[in-house]
Length: 81
Figure (cartoon, rainbow, N blue to C red):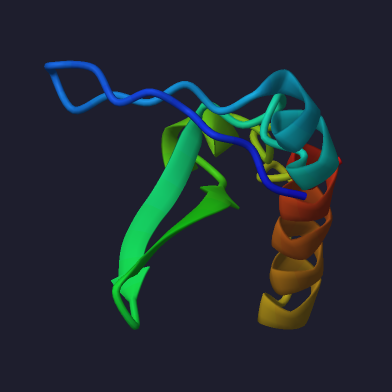
C-alpha cells in the first residue's frame, strides 16, 4: 500500500488511518523512526512507561527468575494486542 502525505513546515507527517490500522499503530503511542538505505522506517514500539505497575500484584509472591521472565513476556504481549 502506498499513500502520499504532506510534510508540514514543522517536519510533521500524518500517517493515513488505513496504514495505522494495518500496522497496529492506533494502539501505540510511541513509534521508532529510523533511516535505512535512504528510506524512513516507522515501527510501532511499546512505551516502557506504559508497562509500569503491570506486575505489582505478582510481586507479592516469591517467584524464580524464569517465572518473572514469563510474566514480563505475557505483559508485553498483552500490550501489543
